[in-house]
Amino acid sequence: MTREEIIEKVATTLSEEFEVEQEVITPDAVIYDTLQLDSLSLVDLVAVVQYTFKVKIPVSDLPSVKTFNDLYDYIESHQ
Amino acid sequence: MTTSRAISKIEELIPQRSPIMMVDELLEVVGDECTCRLVVREDNFFLEEDGMMAEPGVIEHIAQSASAFAGYRAVADGATEPPVGYIGEVKNFRLNRRPRLGDVLDTTICMGATVGGVTIITGTTLAGQETIAETQMKIFVRED
Amino acid sequence: MSEERAEGLSAKFHLAILPECTVYNGHFPGDPVCPGVCNIETIKECAILLAGEQLRYSAIRQCRLTALATPTVCPEVDVQIVLSPAANGYGVQATISDEKQTYMILKGQLDKA
Image (cartoon, rainbow over all chains, first blue to last red; front, side):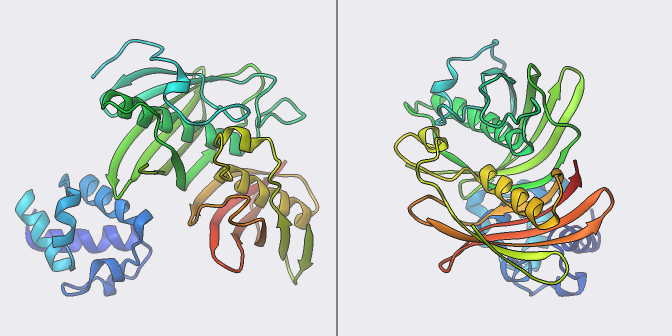
């Protein structure tokens, strides 16, 4: 997947899963705040990325994935 | 990891006790999937006057099946007591019909990602070949 | 159990949690915790009172158990419930809370029995 395809797929998938507008998913936006994550829904993010991109984000890596740009980088480098 | 049928006593795998034990046996474990069984008997906590199980009973049965799987894994890792798990979320639960007295419920649990003590599972309950219910769930396992 | 009825099909119920309920013998021994599924059943029973007819869950879109409910943590709770007409019955949105916190948020479908 190209980076553009990753960005597009992240926007469509996460906006549907977390019921937010695609427009709020921007490169510098903080994922936790934008998707209003909490302890229960954080695992959804990991599961959706794993299911959609076949990329598993270990718990230890989560702190380094703060913004959507970080997420694009992470998926791109772990495909 | 494939294991034989009827894995240890259910009391060793789940913390729940009478009157709300909603799994009889952990039958089989294959990788991230397991199968558990419950026979719907007269003394079932969720049995209603019409001889059918109330819908929340099916959810509890699926949750305890996931709990049995978590217990099985904890015991395999050396735990002496089954972990206490709570339902954190039920999502996309669909019930086709309520189980009735005498039904043998076989539930397949698929264990998904775990983050911060919260594990995603999917559960499908069959009575014979008939699908009774399906759901996603999040189980929060308390660290003692 | 008390009930305040509002327009349409919504209401607020106030109810006490019974510490002597037998379920706490097994959930869990020496550590009574309200089973989440019993709170799901409580919402259904409130819906039945509100709608005035027998109802059963056919689907639960999402039910979040946001805090641990026990007979000591929350001896009394409020159930806020809204029923909206839907095919075969009602869509249900409900919360269980007290003045401290929210214990459950549920969105589901209740069919006429």
